[in-house]
Length: 338
Image (cartoon, rainbow, N blue to C red; front, top):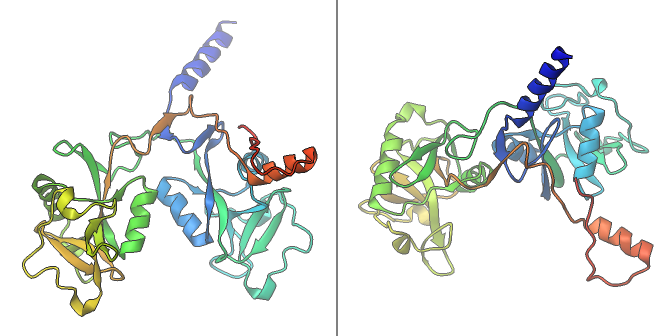
């Protein structure tokens, strides 16, 4: 009896020891899940899940499959199972071969139509189909149980650092990307391209930049320039932050001497020199970039409180209307609550 009481106490305190993660992920007894309702290609889905701190979910166990099926509204979603490296050799992102995963194919699948179907979907009936990887679909990101908690910046990513002068967190990406990709990466990390709002913040950007010598910048010949969050919005013909505010109103508009010069008539995206002075850059050219994050966004929840999410599915609405014989399109029925 004494031993049983000890076991109960250990389990009780283990449960109370909470680990925090993004509130847009729901917690289950096998990990954290997030359904992405905006369709993406398989590569984009894999990347976004990775940047959010998870992985593209795959139905590797009956429990995983059951939770995935509860989480989406469409007829099918991407899984993390794909033949990326060699034709016909399907593995999850974690390297588990399809042969080791209990599964059932949908009728007439796999058919490898036009020899171009290298990704696998999970269908709403629980069966699998092979599909093109470049045709966008919805998907689920999954983060397994972890003792890694969020830091002061509200993220498990250790590369975000808090600056007391601005009460913001910053991350410098040394792997160069173009403006669009840099914006996507910051957004997926729960941040945004950095916006300089003052001389003080410009100094912080300069100090962070100085920690990374030119040799640390990968994929760009412009190692003294980094992307930040402003560009030239043609509608109002002025340099504007990604939050829709003129850089003058935002608080910092100091360009380097001779800039902006719109070299070759294609420099419409905002960058910054190591000196902290602004520059116009080519939106398609790869540069290093700065992400900026507020500590309280996205909000974080612990594994005790973040267990219930409700959702509404168009498919569910249509099914209910068919059952009720209703022709109204204004009635909203809730989907499953999990």
